[in-house]
Length: 134
Image (cartoon, rainbow, N blue to C red; front, top):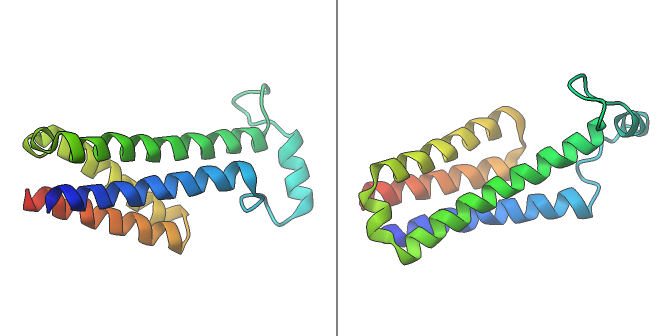
C-alpha cells in the first residue's frame, strides 16, 4: 500500500511537471495579458545580468521548475517500484522528499493558483501517508 501511495504522489508531481513544461514552451498561458508588458519583458534585462531578458529568464525558471518536479517523480517513483525497502528504511530519503513537497505546497499557496495547489497538496498527503504506513 505504501509503495502505491508513493507512486501516486510521484504520478501527480510528474504530471504537474510535464504539463507545466508543455505549457511553458507550447502555449502562451504564462505570457502577461498586457501587451506592453510582454514587449518590455522581451527587451529588458534583469539587474543581475544583461545577457538575458526577463522573458528568457522566466522561460528558464519555468523549465527548471518542471525539471525539478520530473526529477522528484522519476527518482521517488523508481524507488517506490524497484527499491521500496530501501526507500522506506531510509529516514533521510523520506525527509528529503517530504521537505521538497512541503516546500512546493508553501510555494503553491503563496504564488500559484488552485490547480497546482490542489495537486501538490494531494501529492504531499499521499507521500506522507505512504511514509507513515510503511
